[in-house]
Image (cartoon, rainbow, N blue to C red; front, side):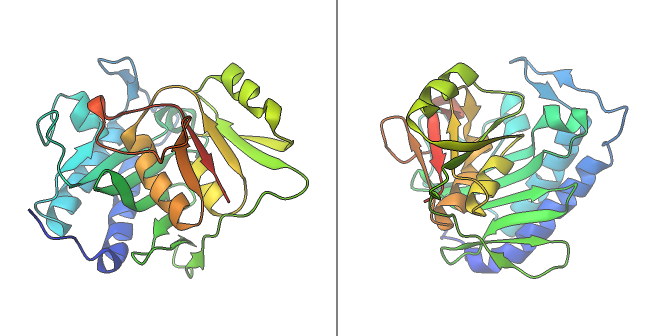
Length: 261
C-alpha cells in the first residue's frame, strides 16, 4: 500500500496541474463548442477529454501508485480497481464539471480534483478556468482561495445570519420541487442559481449557507467540494444525517445537504 501523501507539499503542484487542465479545456471554449452524448446520455466535449488527459498524467507523476477514478475514464469502461475492492486511498476527478455550462459559455464550470482516504474526502481542489480562481485545501485541515498570482485568502463558512439563508441550487440539474419542499422549514433570504461544484465554493467562502441536492450526482461531482467545505467549517450529509462517504457502488451519490456552519 502506498504511504499517505504529504498534502501540504502537493498543494502548489496540484494547483499548477488544475490550471494546466483548465487551459487545455479553454482551447475548446468558443461558440463552436459542441457536446456529444455518452452511453448514459450525459454530455461530453473535447474539452472534458483534453482536461482529463492533463490531470491523469499529472497525478501519475505526482502520486504514483494512488489510483484515479475519473469521470470520462469510467464512462469509457476503464476502472482502476475491481468493483467491491475499494482501496483505502484514491483520487476522484471530474476534469470538466459543468459541461452544459461550458457549452453555454457562462463560465460556471470547474476542474474538480479530490482525494479520498478511508471512504471520506481529505483533500479538494476546485478551479474555475474562466476566472482563474482556485478554491483548495491547504493540506493542514483548512482551506483557502486564490485568483491568478494573488495571495491566498482563508475560506471560512459563515453562521446563518438573522436575515435567513442564502440557498444555492443547480442551474442545469436537480429536482426543484423537492428543493422547494425542503426549504419550507427555512427562512430563505435569497436563492442563487449556479452551475457545477462552484456551489460548494460559495458555501466555503461564506457567501451562501445551504445547498440541498435532490437528484443524481456522482462522487467526482462532490468529493473536492466536500473536502473544501468541511475544512472551511461546513458539512455535507445525507438525508439521514450521515457524512457523505465515497467508494459507493457505481460511484453514485444519494441526495445530500451541504451547509455552511
